Length: 309
Image (cartoon, rainbow, N blue to C red; front, side, top):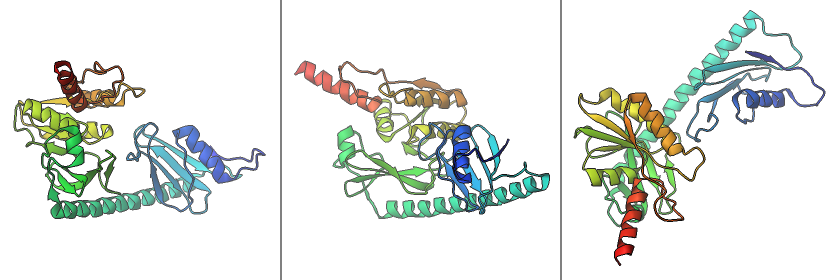
């Protein structure tokens, strides 16, 4: 699709009109940067780690291409009081955008490699986490191969080759952060060796993974974000031994519109033909803020103690 800007008497600049077109067509708000580089943005409704939407603008600000890798749509824009693009202009624009996209991909890979090296160095220099770690203590879970930098819990994220490619840092206030520029898609952390039993669980967060493992004695892989569940499920399903059942464990975000935990888990499960288990929430507490099996288990234990007290 080609969109041609014409002067509508508003006095808005060409780039302001481009920003409006991007918003209208992709439903994202961007500040157009005419630098000839390939810029990535989260798709609508996706987390900040998503980069499915993209925008490329020529250095003179007269041409742009933008789109969404999820939907597959691509739009071409020409600013100013011009006629539609000629075949030659369209071909040249396509070539420039492709070159910028390749360069952006290379730079992204370089950032991911740098983050992976940093993650590996951090784990190498860190101590094994203990029960004294604030997050582990709050969640009443075992360390399960995690590390610690002071009070900060370090959770190594690996690929199918068991290579550490990123870290999720969990702070005492429960804030969770990945290394800047690091890969997340398709990475996971494991509790027990993958496929070491007839059932392999895949869940969202570390606390859920630890709880499920401690209750079932089965291996669990944690995708660390709901948005990453599908990628991890697809990756593990490709290498799962014959006869091993994969079960997706959902978070139950019952207080959040659309319940993204359940929605993402079901989507991931459908992609590989797996079944889903969902924590039965809200629990018996009137002000229930539980969202996962760890919350549910700890809350159930507290209620049991209170009832027997």
